[in-house]
Length: 364
Image (cartoon, rainbow, N blue to C red; front, side, top):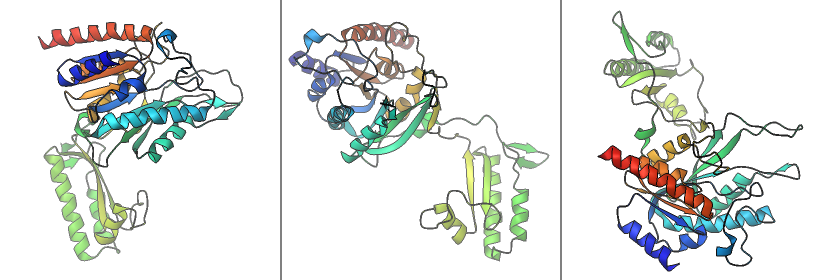
């Protein structure tokens, strides 16, 4: 492992765009220093679903490839050991994005992604999001259950405060607020006139609350004039239904209704954050005849832009043909890919050489 250790040390100390390592990820991870990478994005081999190509002559006798364990509980344990090493090499403010598919075994859906996620939580990981990856297509031969159409992408962190650049992934609104005959109208046609009438006619608001509510509407309309807000909704005590909960202990909005008599939901001109359902077809130009499970490029954009800083280091310990590392380089980050299969590793080197050349030409 000495050559690998030296390659890792040279990469972490230098400015190269990427490093691809052909080897067993657990062994390689153990050679990495603590808190060395900013972000991890990966998709391990799924249990008992595919056979991946690797050079068995390079491995110790009795080595069992990940995903080919005889028992699914052993698979969860193996991944937990690897993820413990990932936790060690990930910076305190770093993020870990994990994609896993489920598995039917003797007609029983195992809940494999959640078995792994719960084991990670038991090890101290903090789960921030469970993203549903709607693949928008799917086929299956079973006639006694519904088609499989989605997979899980879990976002884990080590600490409650972590790097997250939400501005980089906001979805810009397609419409703006407009001034129509001297009246500001929001992107969906809200002017505030109906809210003002409800406030004035309310029997549940005190005079002071009415005054404050009317003032808040005017301030919101001014924000639309200034281009800061494109749309809004107002909830007034006794007029609109309460979102989520009316329990003042668990809902800040319910508490606002009690103390102020109203609250606002505003859409800022800067846009809104993506939801936790991503509709992305699992296709990639490098998928053909190369690898069964290639990350589509669109799947990688939000995790990289939001949780890996510019010039930061992204790690994919099951890098396959290098999709995550290539996306990181393209977006101005650096990447480390670890891949056991020599065939996939060779394709990844070709792919990253092309990507690095494109980036060099673009910069020139």
